[in-house]
Length: 298
Image 1 (cartoon, rainbow, N blue to C red):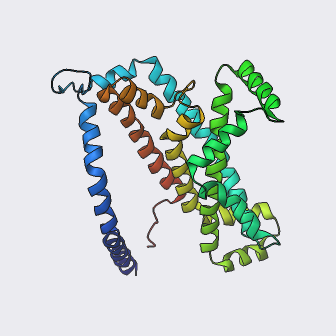
Image 2: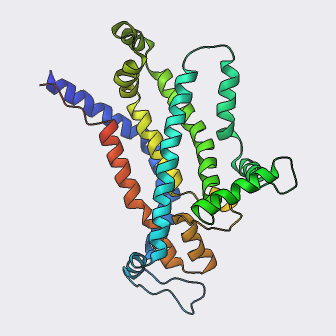
Image 3: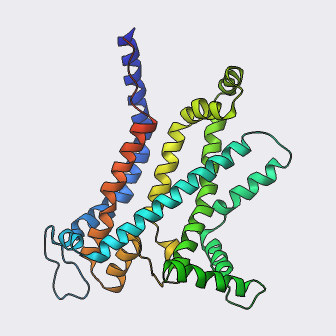
């Protein structure tokens, strides 16, 4: 029996890889060259400001990063930004999913209100968000927003208001996406399982902790990974919401300044690649926690 199950699982794995082959081939075709070029550049002193061809410098660019206080500052800000936004997005997204999983009057309107922040074009959303928090013209609430900005900056330091605005915008859009993702996960679970849980326990918290969360583990793992990836690699939102005035730099904006403003392609590539080990580690830990390997019955 165990041998048959193992053989069946092996066939399923091979079929999964076969079905994923076209997608993997497309990803390798479109991503292999830019990633390979970036890795090669990180080991060179490539720069448009330098005369002559690029020279191989080995791990020099990575060594300079480790001794650069600006890198550690950007890394700390990026980690704080990723953790705060991911925790908030996961909590709000899970709440949205649980709310929409049950039928009620006006459910379609609530779903639309939750879905719009993510579906709406980011460029338009970020401009509206920027004008809301920093009104460009005199409005009824402009003085109140100005006082709030000075209060936050005066309490937490210059630029704290801009950093808070970026965090709120990321949570606003990201929780919408995670909510829709987790709602799809809940709808994919057979309703009979929830009905059995209702017969076993009348406590909503107990059913949520012992039934809903375990069944949603793969979706939760994917949601957390996508949230962390988006936060670590966030450049566009930070850049647009601050109009290029980066007071609290993240890894993405720091790499942008090195490459585009300073013309240091080698150090910029090395800086961008420092995110890869962290993201791979996070991915491995998440899937080990939320989707551990199955043990074959003996």
